[in-house]
Length: 223
Length: 152
Image 1 (cartoon, chains in turn blue, orange):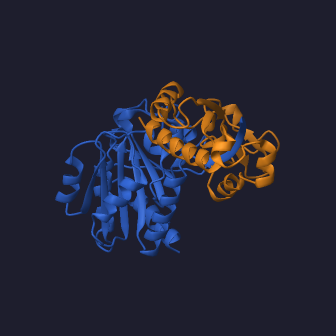
Image 2 (image 1 turned 45 degrees about the vertical axis):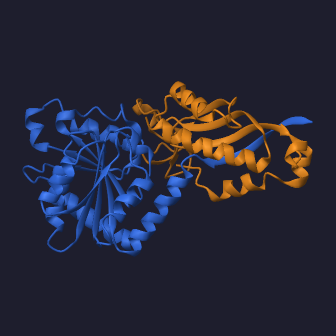
């Protein structure tokens, strides 16, 4: 005898990753480590911005960086040369970071405790948006040279982040076509409460405001 | 290439659910995918067929239901569709609040149901729908439904 039937399943395809992310968030909270996931396209200035931010935090807080890259340790070395504790997470061609990779990279710090931990995610505006990395806040960068019209091309990324950081603002005077107001409107289409910062690591514009926001978020998340 | 990560998870769930239900053949897997999920469906199905070789899902079809971006008005609770490219859709049709909403759907990705068949005699568990109701073999799915985050 053979018959068929429907199995009502209703199971989240990313449930395992989400559960691991929730557990990791809770664990870091218990250790009073605030974890920020930094996403952007390649060349938007993630490493440079992180170094500028960490400079603000360094005096009174311990900072660490998980440097995710498809290949090479170029950025990880740059962070280490600046005297910041970092671990390289080389995905060997995989376009995104999942929790298993984050946990493994974090273990490589060998129990060093941080007040602020950053993940420099893979340079990509598509795939990283899909996977929870266990961060307390997720931010994305969009540099002025890339152009302002990215929301319509990558709406999910703009939908899942807590803050948009417009980087390389020192290029604004030479890029009159970069419509900051249009970007603000479009970026909030799926995310009306999105925080938006305009910064330049080169001139220092906006970095203090962004650092202050991260401090406030840490206080709120740590309770 | 992130489709592979999704397909791998789907295969794990399908094989697990089939084993729990005593199914020996899966004919279709129904997926609910938000429009915000960047999935190339043809590529996705090809990967699924590749990974399904030699499993109970070897002959399964993938059925995709796409779910649009829906938001909930923070003023009146009305749920409506926002079209990313059309600024005219960002106003609540009920109370007129402009861009005062929260995204409630459009990023989900879950397996809604699986079409299964099997030889009841060989599985020591009847797959007859009536018997299913009596023995409640779907308890597991219900439990998972409660346990897992299905929404965004």
